[in-house]
Image (cartoon, one colour):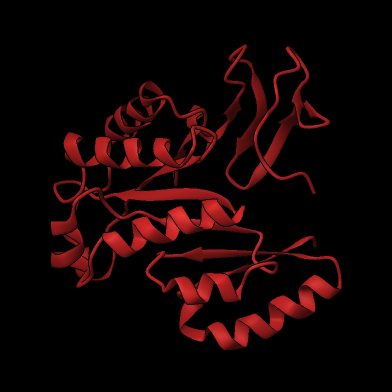
Amino acid sequence: CKIISYTYTEPTIAFEYFFEIMKLAKSRGLYNNFVTNGFMTEDVLYCAKGYLDAANVDLKSGSDEFYKSLCGAKIEPVFNSLKVMKKMGIWVEVTTLIIPGMNDFERDLKTCAEFIFGLGKETPWHVSRFYPQYRLDKVVPTPFSLLEFARKLGLDTGLRYVYTGNVSGDKGENTYCYNCRKTVIKRCGFEVVEYNIKDSKCKFCSAHIDGVGL
């Protein structure tokens, strides 16, 4: 094990507890990663400086109205957290769970893609499939065509790495070299089945592949 990921549920709810674990992890050469909704104060992030290496942040929509109606929150603090994380040198990835009829509008997806591009074109964006659960058990699963549309939108915006999530075996699970377009990491679910990166470079064209080497 090289990384501890803090998730299920929001790690900042128990930040003081997790922070003690993060310090112990660092002292033993481990990396720390938050899976978070991004709704936190800057104080938390600056407190974690030097201990938090990476974060996968939910950007639930590009619409403030969606945040207010479904999450009881505002989008601006999430935008700000993402900006601060990037400024601090934390490796950031963004995930958007696409819910049919709620946050799947082209204008909102475009807002997400453009904001992420503003963070840096190397920032990965995961567009994930929704499945009916809990209070949204009457909503249909996200159509594959919608995930493909969102992924293409992200790539057309200029993002280097856009992935489809919750669809095992889909081509959107793979990492492609932005320069030669060949597959540098082939995945199936949680398994890596092919790896074509050496010294952080594409084996085919030697382009630098963004990420964190472990």
